[in-house]
Image (cartoon, rainbow, N blue to C red; front, side):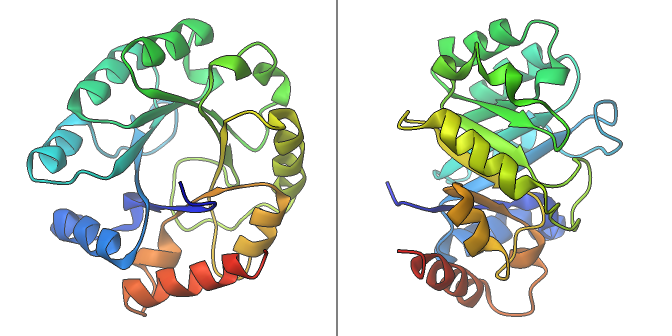
Length: 222
């Protein structure tokens, strides 16, 4: 596995040509496709469901696909997305009545399990769950909408989570406001998966140039 992984958030893609957009960013070198699933209850926005994921899989998209559930009543959606082809399911502690049970549900279906932490979510919830997690997603913006700016206090939160993870085989993913100007500092803080939306899909440069520039910036760390 690469040291640093780039996940393209399709929330910023052109949905008229979603299949082609995904194919293009994969050819340009992204490692993961990131689904932001919103139900207009947990967050004030409504996006996509399992049918879209199933359609992509049926039409030849074989890459890793993160499914980030920003929804209420998540357990049925967990099963639906796994059956549709999710590689990993990421949930918020606030969205489950029985968080341990929901994480176990993901794992029991053979899928990678992740926990998403909003900017104001305490790290205390990690204490009893970290042994079950494959990844932790740090929200560096308040969830619900694309194009927000990175919240500066999140650098320290990433650093603290990295210390908690220590040498465990857990990916540390960051989502929100990531661009060519701040990605190096985010990586130095401890992240190794970078969810990027607007900085890829809204960029005037070709996707391959954008991804190349991001890789070059990350490579200057080591």
